[in-house]
Amino acid sequence: MHPILTVGSVAFDSIKTPFGERSRVVGGAATFFSVAASFFTDVRMVAVVGEDFADEQMQVFGGRRIDLTGLQRVPGETFRWKGEYNFDLNSRETIYTHLNVFDQFRPVLPESYRATPFVFLANIHPGLQLEVLDQVQAPRFVAADTMNFWIDGTPDELRAVLGRVDALVINDEEARQLSGEANLVKAARVIRNMGPRLLIIKRGEYGVLMTRDEAFFAAPAMPLEDVSDPTGAGDTFAGGFMGYLASADEITDAAVSRAIIAGSAMASFAVEDFGLDRLLSLTQDDVRRRFDAFKRLTHFEAL
Amino acid sequence: MHPILTVGSVAFDSIKTPFGERSRVVGGAATFFSVAASFFTDVRMVAVVGEDFADEQMQVFGGRRIDLTGLQRVPGETFRWKGEYNFDLNSRETIYTHLNVFDQFRPVLPESYRATPFVFLANIHPGLQLEVLDQVQAPRFVAADTMNFWIDGTPDELRAVLGRVDALVINDEEARQLSGEANLVKAARVIRNMGPRLLIIKRGEYGVLMTRDEAFFAAPAMPLEDVSDPTGAGDTFAGGFMGYLASADEITDAAVSRAIIAGSAMASFAVEDFGLDRLLSLTQDDVRRRFDAFKRLTHFEAL
Image (tube, rainbow over all chains, first blue to last red; front, side, top):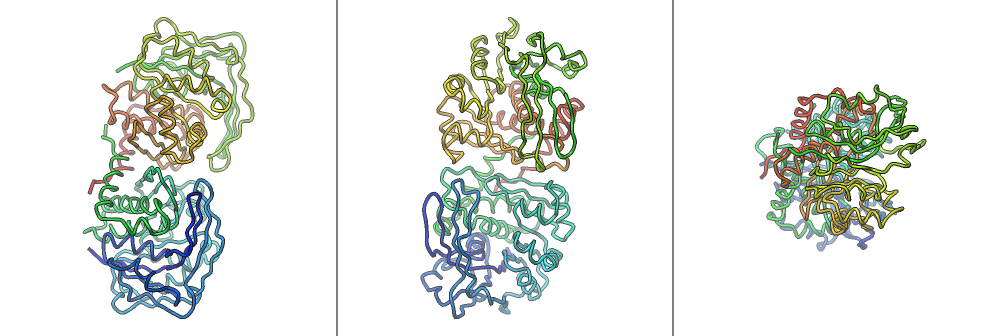
């Protein structure tokens, strides 16, 4: 079992879906990732919050395997995001994004973080992702997330990141945009040639397609009767994936496939309630049962 | 191993995709279904063609386990359809549909067909589907396909069909429309309450979601580097599914799951070339290898 370092946003989210509304709840990529990953291993967080992030909010990290030495608290307001989802939850509109203290954020790794063997760079400016990579010592496995905004806006810095990571986590539209290929098998090959040997393509309610070298693994999303809020599902997936992988003895095809299922299981919980709520009440037994449910959902006997 | 009876269209298709064009090739739901199912068991076809359907076209059925006693040949022209696909093959525009001889088609089962234990009602007017059901003797397993056109246009006759089938095969949009539920788990329950104990929801490039009673099984689509033409993929899936199931000893959850994979394997071949072309050159070995590839694509070890 190895610890994981993550860098990304901690935020106040305001969320509206067809099933309800929440204002100013704790969110952000680093938050969802860390809470999910902490079910499997120790997590070291690098992020920034403002003075409005009180003890009450800090409690979401309490009693978990999350090291907050690298969480900066600075004057000003915490990053705020507001989004509204459409009726089938498959698309959303961002009402506002206030970077606030995140605007001047420069990641600084505490000395105790520098030798962390597993690293997850959440979806932030690729320049900041590079700054983190410059501060870690010979990590064993690095994964990054990114989005259309950086693919379009900072292609050179993004390419520099891709040349230094083992895995990339993006959605299918972004995979097509980044590669210039409509066909996902071809897109995956183009992206692997940019650096990451392992590519995870997120497909929302349809699950995940993973490719490592020339092999593919596909996991469906769990069919759920009650989906309240997809916010953070992708980062929660990444947390479960990296958490499981860091807890495994070796990075083999078998371990990677199980890590994909662990990530899918965590994400399937995240969407069942608003924001972090379902993850905060989750037990290890819940996680094991959901993993088993994925086995039942996908298992068939060979011919 | 049991024979399968199917009723549906035999057609001349004209197809345009970003990867090429074909004019007046043999297609139709009953054609794709029968060719696919004949890899697993004997198929008895009920359909109609016009005088323009020559020996040359009949050859697609030759040398296969397809009984054409129920294929009517009548004066006039064969059903013709022309469609054009968009750049990512996920949607298409119908340029024309000429029913021709299909307009006056009334299915008449030869005496030798009446005791067929497995029945597949392809996507035709539900009134015709009912006429077929009135002519078969106590079938063991009946599956039907349908579409938005009948859900909207002939809801009462469609409900009568649903009350008499064991399985329904539709796409996710149609499942939502038929049930009035956006959530697929709820939609499936509503549809099962209309009659079919088994529901197969087709999701195109994302694969298939199956539910039988309260259990779910999900199969991804095979990631393919070359997809030429999705025409007939759904009927080919149904042919592989019903063919495998009819060749199994019992209709158990395990057999149904493998049948879903058999259908997915057949559909993954169908899209690799235009029209029927890939299916016509397919061998039993190809099918077994593709089934194994699905196992590798989805397999992971339980915790």
